[in-house]
Length: 617
Image: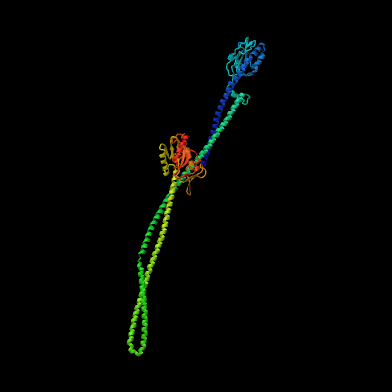
């Protein structure tokens, strides 16, 4: 960890040193250039001062002196006033040379600054051989009246003769010697030794050099400011670029993760849908079996003999009637036995009287009683048989009713189960449809995400765009999923690029069907797609919205040379949504004229508008 920190610290220190060296190098280069220009300006001032200003001033002076000095000096020489001659020659402060010689010019009589001891650049001309190269006027006795030589103007380098001639004896010559200008290096040394001299020449040099120094600082400061601003702008652009790349990497990662999640979720939805369909099919099969069972039960209920109840009831009624008849006979026999018993008792009472007479009758009665009791016993057995028959018949009747009730209840239960299963089947089918719709939405969402993953198989919407371009622009070049990224930008795959001889259009496909509108600011906020109660965020892999994405592609294409298009060719951008989508009016009115946001219905027309716009430009 410490090694990494030390490495980063060394990198920062080296970077800072490198930046300082670059600043000093720029300062040095700027100073050299500025002082070079300043030296050239100073030399121009030097040349202008000595070769133009001073030369013209001396020309004017020589012209004036040529008109006046010969007369004055001639008169002083005639009057033998050498001191006056010297004072006259010293009146120019030795700024240039005035030299008086004899008539032959070989002997020097007097010259400017002779007694001052001040060295002058022109004193090299005191040599008679050198003196012959300079202009002169003759001194006459009597003094001349007219000037015999003159300069036509202050820029003239040579004198011309006048039309006047003076008469008299030549008594001497007066030579006019221009001051020898110092070399440029000598002037610079004078400037360095005394930069604040009162000399206008030195002041001019100082002003020029100070101006150059100030210009150096100003230019360097301006250059550094521009470079600083450029660095700041570059840093901001790099930060924005890095943010875009970082966001793109994050988005691509999230996109891949989201696609995997959607694929897994879609697989789950498909499995759930298949399971629901299987459950629905099982319920449908069960319902069919229940329906068949219900039909069978209904047939069973119908197949129950309808006459069984009547027969059993009739038999039961008949048995009851026979039982009642048997009971009636039993009662009759009982009464008959009672009567016979009473008769027997009476007969027994009478037996005592008529025992012998009545014994036969008593036996007869006894036999009748026995017969009657025998019939009564038989009736009793019949009664018991009838009761058992009644019980059996009643049991059969009750069993049949119970069976019918049980079948009816079972039928009702099956019908209830059938209704419940049918409802459940409908719910399962409805749930399956919902899962199918969700699966379809997931598939659409996954397609939209796949659109942003760079190179990918074209979806149906992109195929429609491709066919539309091929049909309406057969002579144009169509690039599919072209990477417009350059340098460190990373890959930036466009959906389509339409290249013609007059213009170029980058096309970005967005598979969102609904009303397209911005959340807030059109250029700097996200966009959404409203579809019913749904508000779907429109995904963009570069920037916050499709406008920023298509603009990023256009800006990158300007720097990208891989497409082989003319650098002066106008580049436009179009974001296309499917047919039936509605684009909010605020979007097109708030973006650049080089961009369009449209639907596939108006796609061709918008490209033609851009073509017309390129012709106007």
